[in-house]
Length: 272
Image (cartoon, rainbow, N blue to C red):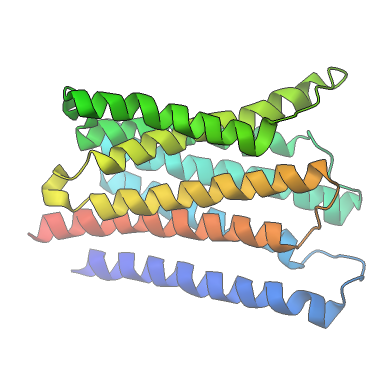
């Protein structure tokens, strides 16, 4: 009982934090003016605390599932570490904007965190699929076709959204790598999560399906956020504290809630 109340408090804390940060995002340009000299305390320098909140509580939930000793515990841990990697990237970007007061370079040190979250999300999605019994269900021919067609579809979508007509600049090979790496590797973890959702109906009586959908939606918003960032940067329209940062906040919020909600399942199983 007490554990359930604590988990509900964690979720409510995430909701309150999201509402406060959203209000901050709305009022920031009104109070300070759109052309003010940005300072520490602006929305763009603090909204990453949502990812920090989700990462910390996600690790706590992972430990309740057995941590690295269980497949589900490791899956939750990977998603939590992915959020903390985003915190690193956001912190570096805030340092560029508010301490050095320079335009955020791309690529930069912050991409170690941003891109580093992708393999963590991929591994987390693989573990989530394993915990759901997806590998067993792939014995079905129809499921095998889904396992082939969904990733191909996602990679095709990623190509046409990001890379169609791409102009290679080999004077900056790291940028070329990231320009391809971000959309294509993110398509992988979304494909795995989508497959897991479609094939997990029987897991724990179906109780996990809504939770996996939650994670899938969070990963999709993360994908959309990075797409928007790359699109705006390529056209030099990215604005610190703009709607792009709000998209990232939404992705962090959804992932935080998804991870916290996985703790409620465990509590219900224990109580049942």
